[in-house]
Length: 154
Image 1: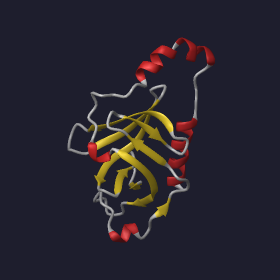
Image 2: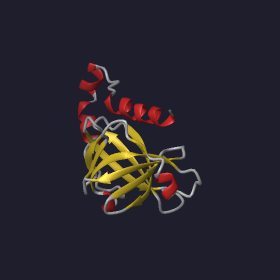
Image 3: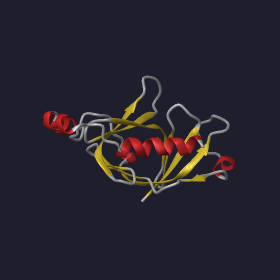
Image 4: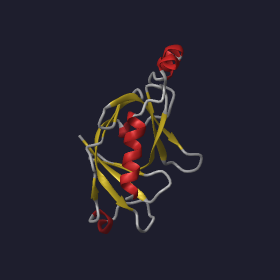
């Protein structure tokens, strides 16, 4: 149930538009400038590419790894979530292929990077902490929870 809520919130946040017509007209040039790809953020070449969400597992032993026993309990994604991350920090995100930019920034302590998606209006969407990246999979820990999202490289 918690994962359904997370997916729902991500989808709603990705598709929602809280701007009124007058706000979008007055802030149009500012929003366009902010939505441009970020070249100064710490992007990681290993996460660049196209990804599709496979599903999620609970990290029952809190070791930030997907163990074989946990992988057996994989909950398939309720919908085909999509993510394309380009070298310049631009990309597409979610089923709606929402244009915007991403930042993979290191936390204050440790070498793990936190992935944040910014839509065209520069609205941030917390994706989670990048736990591991391989040629075929990307594992992201959900913000504030024990779930690990599994993405496969396309």
